[in-house]
Length: 184
Image (cartoon, rainbow, N blue to C red; front, top):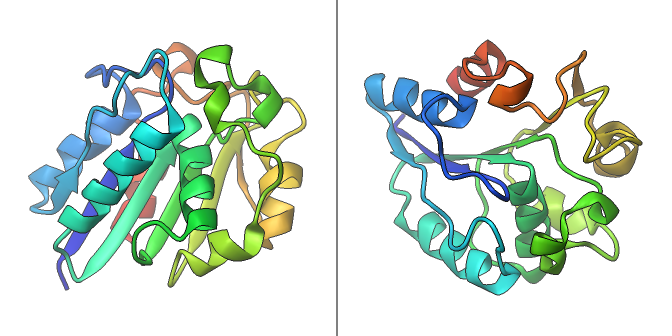
């Protein structure tokens, strides 16, 4: 079964080659998968509506029999908004990495802040597995993604000890967890 991957970055991410998402995209391409890793519009001051349009176009372009989405940081909130609005068709698997708490989203991404999480809509946006990976010391989510997102979604987050926001600055260039999750 052919699998397509869509990898979505967060705020202020210009897709540097040392980032785990860039490395993941390369590894998946090397294994013969279709991979879309778009540069989302205006990453330093993103607007929700622009990113929703980009997401819809990217989802429509996936051709695999199985469609897998990997979101990091602000892209997790993008997915939550898209799910609430019913944007795009359902995907087979979803990995949410380091989803920030709305109040911790920098002002440049304020349009992504959530009033509430529509957990039913998020669950309905995915046919199969939804996974969350977060750290125990993420400055963008000090309360923790488990209580904020995992519990409402009815899933147990994978906790990365001392992982910060799971970026190259906190040691996450290569990240075997993401590679292994995608290969399942």
